[in-house]
Length: 226
Image 1 (tube, helix red, strand yellow):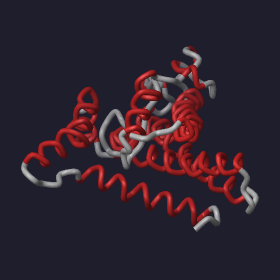
Image 2 (cartoon, one colour; image 1 turned 180 degrees about the vertical axis):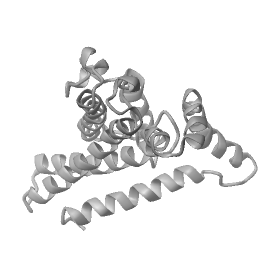
Image 3 (spheres, one colour; image 1 turned 30 degrees about the horizontal axis):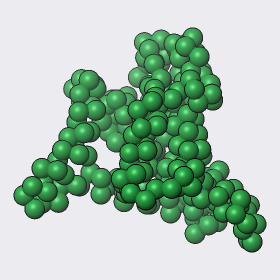
Image 4 (cartoon, helix red, strand yellow; image 1 turned 135 degrees about the horizontal axis):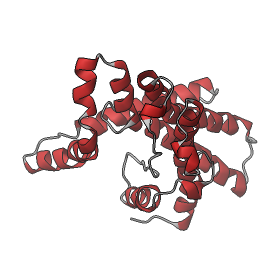
């Protein structure tokens, strides 16, 4: 494993900020569009304690980090949204869902601009800050891509439900209770099964890594770091 305290220290802030701002963005968007459910629960907040999920925010990213996973991600406590309370339920559901990934892209861009502002001659403190910023770009890009997978309850699934014709949206929305099981099957069980027969079935992770790489390159280009 060989993961040092330094390795952990350069991931803590990127993970907390990326996940907290992602969920806070959902809560803020829902509040602005007519649903006060998250607001009443104190979730329209940038206080990490309001959003931290012990497993998704701490244990899962730590496990992936220690396992040297090529795809690092985590999650916070989902923001409760009563879509019936939204001013225009179908289209507003799309805006609420998009708020999280868009916020992650903005955070990645901010990190990229911050890298440009660092001095050329780096001391130990500046190197630590630089590593945090690089990790922020990588993590926010990965979260944005992962959450836009068109599988409910991920944000991409809810965007698809809001935009697709009703004949397609209704069956897709019914997958929401099974969404996490589908993800586990695609990302973990399918590759494991394939490895038993000498087959590489890690297709979804490969696609996610490729798309994340493209997003990172776009962020670096837009912030003058390419």
